[in-house]
Length: 347
Length: 286
Ligand SMILES: Nc1ncnc2c1ncn2[C@@H]1O[C@H](COP(=O)(O)OP(=O)(O)O)[C@@H](O)[C@H]1O
Ligand SMILES: [Mg+2]
Image (cartoon, rainbow over all chains, first blue to last red; front, side, top):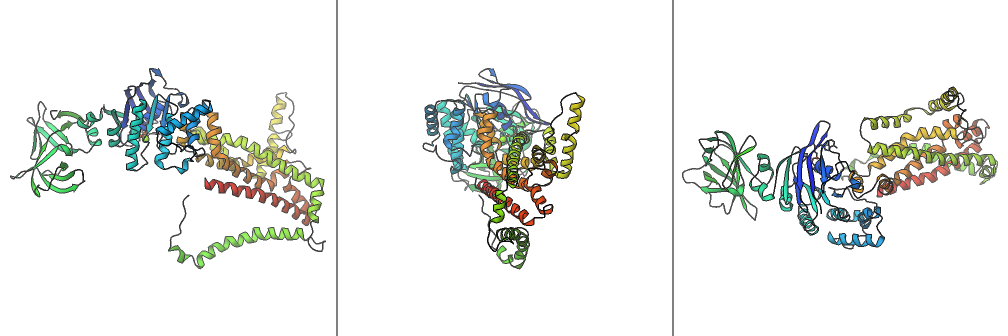
């Protein structure tokens, strides 16, 4: 199987820097998600691994072999595109068999390999269908089958399910995870959806403007975001501006003890599920604005005495008083200053 | 396919004004196209000398070797011009579709250039460059090389001129046909191992056929009635149908025969016109 190494990979288009000195080691059989907002350089990075874009600096290694300038047709990678990548003048079988036919494999072997991979993506018996007779989800399954049939060392997926609806996206995501586990294929998966990354990845790379903000396991990226950007991009996050004075973070009536942090402005980041809200008879830090019932959980919208808006996840919420009189207690949090973590809640 | 649905409100305004707007083109079509066709058919099928219906004029055309030679030459020119035109334009269109950068836009401008040059100027430029004692001749002579046999006044004269004249439209149509092949489809083919030739034959060409058919039928329609280039650059005998019709009409003062020739040419054009309509229809369906 295969290891993928990216060494200080960079790409500029004219004056735009799409990817800047990006390094990453993907272990054999690992699934790494590249997560970032649109324009953060995810596709460019993936396309450099696939050979569709020539890096302006750095190198790409597959199993220790430098492939930086190898054209896509000679790379052991396979790519699944977002859409419009099926050949509409061929049927499903023809699409999947094309790569095998180029390699001049015997007919019987082509048929058996196509059959196997069609079964793998749950499309047995669809070989004779025309591609325009398939639904969006089925088309992406064919695209995945077409990539897998060549038994590539590295599988690359560029927002493969972005144009599908939520339910289908979740189902296909699970299927991809299953297939990837079963085949043990080293995979890079590009997405701009944090839930997709959290549910799929062994490791997540959070990209911002062509640079990695944080690389880590989903739980790590979620629980201990390294920068305010990561904190804000993954999951929902409350951010409270305030200041550190004499070893305490202050935002209005909300106070947190910090150790060994110099005084100055700071920002508290706390997730809705890590914010305990209680009624404070003597008046508190925040007031209740609204309660929304999502079925599985309830979210309350709060406003602090300083005018900042917050969300908190509560079990019930009906018992909370209207008006000012709520006390806030963050159970897990981080404090940032100048885009750096300066303090974290004890684990 | 998206169906265009007329909003229900539009039905009310589709009164006199709508009819009036449609009436003009319909009237022009009737006057300039349908009427001449009918009149041509009637005049040639009921000639003056015969007392009614007679195929005599057509009989005369198809039993006259000279006329048949001219028709044959026209068909040959159509075929050869189309082939050369495709051989030149397909690579050009491919280049324009896939190349990026300043050179590509330069080539694009150059490829469109012939569209803005009138045929008559093209014809004289041709004579100055490729004609006897033209630029090419002079240069070869100066280098002490053999004289070329100039294509001027041979069957190749019109072919070269017509190819040059038709390049812009052909390249335009082919590039727009190529535009229908999405980039991911091409990259996916490279991804599974297709080299450029395989890519062209198996992925690009199948999506290009319909625009190639459109181009061929349009070109041939134009070639049948081409006049200036065959007249100035072509041989005196046999001659292409364009000059032949003109000469029959004004030099031989035989309008009836000229009309017969025109009707025959129209027959061929309708054939290719149907071909064109079919390709376009198939294009739409895809
Ligand atoms: N072919 C290109 N030419 C010029 N700029 C490009 C090209 N491809 C990408 N870019 C630029 O590079 C940056 C990263 O793009 P991309 O990798 O597509 O981001 P993402 O996939 O994360 O949305 C963007 O600013 C984009 O405008
Ligand atoms: Mg992208």
